[in-house]
Image 1: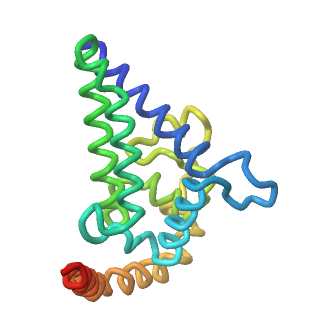
Image 2: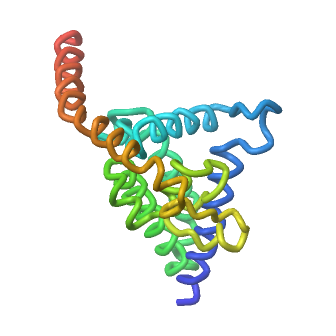
Length: 197
């Protein structure tokens, strides 16, 4: 049972470090531009979320429908498979890591399809995208950001209040296009199936 708190700690630290150093590529290019395929991809995710008030259209549809979702799932699956050999000797630890991976996937996707939910239930991640993007690296939890002193509250601040109406409007406009994008994905799938015939 000791594996449960150990798994929570390891995941919290690992999530924070991967987000800060791999996805944000801290220590990358001197002018602040992301370097490396994962950092460049993550930069696009940040651009979409900021442009759309926290909403990211890349999270619409099934997991295989966008490179954003595929890459995220592949990364999470790699971490999960890396822990597989430990299942026999540390079943509680391994199960906790797998739970955290599933929770991360579920919550991160929901946060970008429903920014109002993110603001209420994962404010640290909302803060990360709409506040200072070089702070608040936790997605599932914010406790390691507090320990590492990278937690910066944006929700409820004067800065957030002054732009809140604009962010809500942007998110509503972006999500309103979801039905059209789903229809387009469906048509593109049909066209690609027909072209293979």
